[in-house]
Image 1 (cartoon, rainbow, N blue to C red):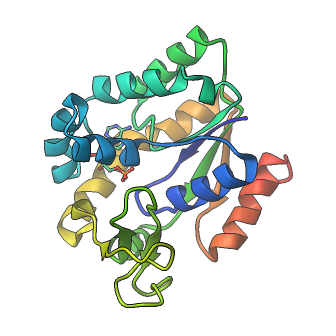
Image 2: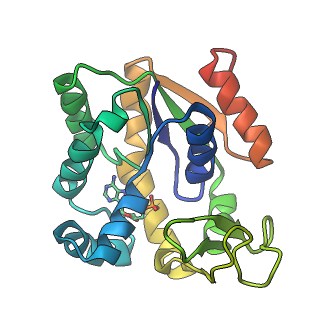
Length: 218
Ligand code: AMP
């Protein structure tokens, strides 16, 4: 299965993709996670991306396209994959189509996780992430707090707030989403690939709807 997730920042794509990756044993390719890892590692892509990420705007397309070309052509992705955060605009979607053509593959489905703006802001600003990059667990100060103050339940590492999850940047990230990413809803509707799932409510309940949708019942 080749699944693509669309949705605004804070819609819960990462959480649902992680659960799906575990259930179907598929690689989860999160553009944000890949970029943050590149920034930490100080690679050329990371250096190119950092200033854009710090402003909450999109990193230049070629950085992402090169990154995903490298990933999607690995044997690990031959049996399928879950894309999270890429593509994020129409030119990236067109490049993905070309790339998939080259490897004789196509997307099975595009899941659009829909959530209201107010909830998105609350989810983003309350998000706390595990500082251990091999863990990457994500919490929320109100709806999913860690058991011990500011420590990861899974590995015990310190939690932190992503610099782009601060209130000041949320508006700009949501605007970027509206202007550049939302047109992908029409792009994939036209290709008869889009299925919309509500991103509101309990994580497991949403996951149930995602699974039903993948099984053709949603
Ligand atoms: P995320 O973790 O998906 O919210 O992404 C964090 C930041 O990484 C975004 O605000 C962008 O600056 C950058 N980013 C992630 N995915 C993309 C993409 N497909 N195209 C351009 N920039 C991206």
